[in-house]
Image (cartoon, rainbow, N blue to C red; front, side):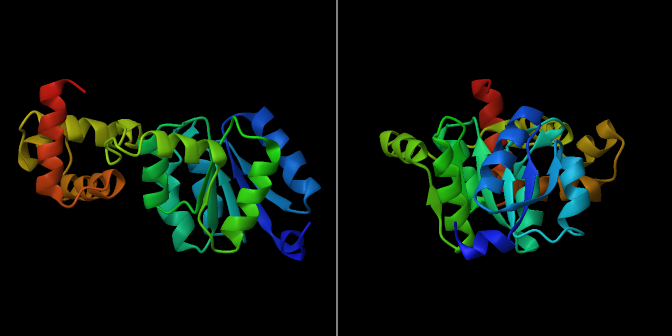
Length: 214
């Protein structure tokens, strides 16, 4: 148990109470302090700016959206993020790391791997769990930049689909009863979430997805 862990305040974000309870027992056994437990993105956002956390242990599948939506805010507030997720797809792992997570541990790892990950990300290191490393190694020759659309909110998915259908910004704005400027804002968010270069590149991706039916 390190001296660092005795000073660390932790935010637990997972939509399963039993998982949060298990993580609480595990982390407290290593002298971490669980400052806040949340089950939704909305709850987490309330405490990211007001709470004094050094570490967030974050699930990606929250009850009201994706934990990916929280990564930018967590990183901006200097909070080290360790993703603890059931998702083991290489594209999901890579995307979470690109969006600001310092570490990624799957829920099929041994408990001590979570502690190793927490210590590593607090030291400013990148941590990839053994199972994640195996998945990434086995898929090293495949396309890793294919991002799953579950990271988008429902409104963002609607806009992405509309782009794929060839609708203009004005068409989308009228259809959704929002301003063209708001449409542009949503598109910028989608660009950041999916890691594409620009809105034109996003439009090409949306059309491609529509054509292949994904």
